[in-house]
Image (cartoon, rainbow, N blue to C red; front, side, top):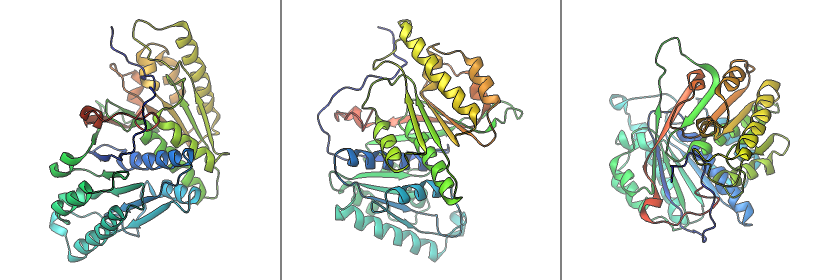
Length: 376
């Protein structure tokens, strides 16, 4: 049977209660975004199951006095779910290297870890995000043995997400999932891309989730500016229900119903190369009509084109109309494109940010039964 390019049909599995240890590292963009996307998904699943998913966002090396990309997304989370999100920031506001470490840096790192360690042991949280803990460990600001021991002894239900460049081998070893974001550089200096076009591709986990983190960021920026920043999410090859992003999108729409629109298209089945059906072309075109109109309208701050890449790779959509729409997009509109593909479409050259997500480790390889709506 030919290899599938599309999105695998969600299968019904038994309940999985064990939280996983995620590590997202690499030089590419999207690490903190995917962590916030996972947070949003966990909150959505909690709402669906009539439970509260409490979250701790522990942000190392991000002290007060500097603005970071994810600040707006966290603002949107705290506004939307004020009783569920706790945030602690530690460290200096400026960047520093191994030769610039001070006593204050060590104290701040330890302060943050003390909070995280207590939160992990308490069992009160559903998700603990250790944002930028990887470089903290790489700088030897914390004991790697202490961190690994505490994470290994976490409560079964707790999901732990570690982000930042250069995850140490000891942390990767205990991780259930390890995805690396690698930046893809354009071939010539002239190909600098169009500001506001971002692409997330590759075989690793985190592409669609990272895109939803970008949508959350747009909403948060609008809140801080007393504006309504609308987000459109269009999904191809996902005509069924129960996919990973569903809970996250549901949580967004529950808190910001007037700001988030969602459209899905395609069959609830794998689309095999060489076995495309007429309905696959019809559904792909329908999705693109919605997408191109949303982009051209200027009504949306962020338009997420989820799984557009495999749709084009399967030749369900031509490249040229996509290129022309992206070339003419309003300056203030962000377009986020996701999905793996064998052959890179020409519109990749228009992206100002292109991260390829590599899968180094996935808990499915250890026989963990995947849960619909959580893992796919």
